[in-house]
Amino acid sequence: MFETVKYETRNGVAWLTLNRPDKLNAFTKQLNKELEKALKEASRDSDVRSIVITGAGRAFCSGQDLADVDDQMDHGDVLRNHYNPMMKALSKCEKPVIAAVNGVAAGAGFSLALACDFRIASEKASFLQAFIHVGLVPDSGNLYFLPRLIGHAKALELAVLGEKILADEARNLGLVTKVTTVDTFLEEVGQFAERLANMPTKAIGLIKKNLHASWDVSYDEFLELDAQGQRIAGLTADHAEGVQAFLEKRKPQFKGV
Ligand SMILES: CC(C)(COP(=O)(O)OP(=O)(O)OC[C@H]1O[C@@H](n2cnc3c(N)ncnc32)[C@H](O)[C@@H]1OP(=O)(O)O)[C@@H](O)C(=O)NCCC(=O)NCCSC(=O)/C=C1/CC=CC=CO1
Image 1: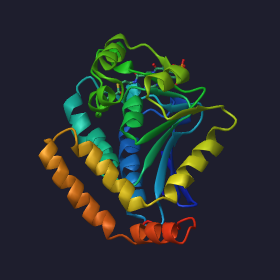
Image 2 (image 1 turned 90 degrees about the vertical axis):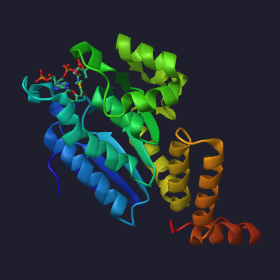
Image 3 (image 1 turned 90 degrees about the horizontal axis):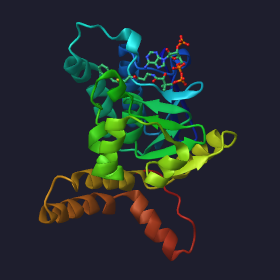
Image 4 (image 1 turned 180 degrees about the vertical axis):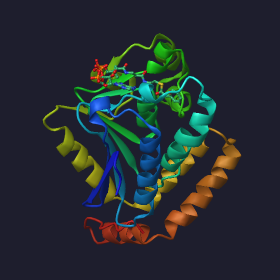
């Protein structure tokens, strides 16, 4: 299906593996486009109820392929034409997305991990604001998500100093949900992704939507978003099943509809 992204589905989970291990899964235009398409495919497929993004080999993603940067190129247009569509496909996805950070996440690879809903890190994972080392500014939504996750002061420190953050520090900062050993990494990511895939998918999508909206609207406007979201959730079969299961004292079987 794709050359630079491995796309697999099993047990309700789409696994999207960035697949340029020799270059630490650095982004090329092809990888930007294929990840965008893979995200849209997983968003569309009703059998998919959670998504994992990870990297082949020893890295998660090392950001822009620096051998593929042309002196003459307008970096703003590179973002507009190649990165932003990929990042928008991710932000528009209503299903839970997990960044399974198996190794280094640098530059736009760090941004990609930040834009996911959850980050699970292997003990070998690290996070690097590589941009400053090549005289650039963190992009692809990096400075949108980072202060929301760890606060302004720490976000500024990481972006300006560009020091590598190891997995345990990332957990202490609140950047990752959990850190696993190398040996149990894929199994634990799989278990977490399948747990999400068996939850009320529409409600998760609405939680994502309203949490994002909460940064941009007044409290009164937000209360109206609550009402709109709850109306939609209240009409789902999963809501009916949740209530029924509670009354019957059994475990609910959510179907994602
Ligand atoms: C810290 C590193 C990510 C990992 O370091 P290390 O583990 O020591 O591994 P290396 O020996 O450095 O790398 C192994 C091989 O992979 C190649 N490689 C790694 N990263 C890239 C890359 N980004 N582009 C191309 N190739 C890469 C590396 O050359 C080695 O190959 P050989 O074995 O053939 O020699 C470290 O690798 C590192 O700092 N990488 C660069 C990180 C970086 O600066 N990323 C880009 C930031 S800018 C960005 O992401 C976004 C944009 C968007 C728009 C426009 C323009 C630019 O940037």
